[in-house]
Image (cartoon, rainbow, N blue to C red; front, side, top):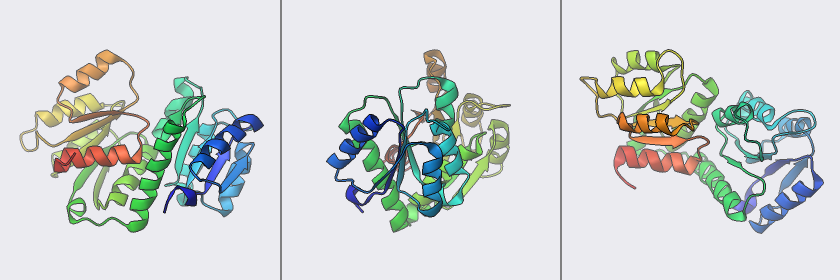
Length: 264
């Protein structure tokens, strides 16, 4: 598959903005675009056809971009469809659910063709790995613990890891549950959120680094935290990789390969 084969659902109430985005997509030879002026129109279209990527504005006449991606993640057919938000919105209340749902990117208005191209190619990588069913023996043998209080986020990471060929996946809803599991089973990689109830990601990391059996297991921590002091504290606790949401598929894949196999 190449970019010209992508089916795009474009959700944008402004005729001008739709035209601008269509022009950017055309520069990548993407012509199969379903234009929607509201969220319900997009949802109705996706009831009959599954797109490769949904590109949406945040504020729509009938709902928000957050509502669209939430609807997609609750539909098994659309749970793996990539979602890109294009918005000037900066409020945490709107953006955090989109990040948690595993958006492949959040682009500001205006954005550059290079920024859009990066997201589109990441979508292509995601679909390519999924369609070719990667079954590399090293990935098959990888054992991963996924820790996040958001079921949507856990599902997003599970889908990515499954597309890489990983079969041994264990989930935990918070750091406390994760450490109980960690003490009973060996893992090659821990992927954890930072903000969680009971035991957060930093506390879990500290427990892992003090563990007698697996103190050096790679820990990839995912966060939308902006406070520099908090981020510095995480780094000093021995995290293997600290990455910010939203994450693109190709970035996650590269980091995992680097952490586990040492192949940059």
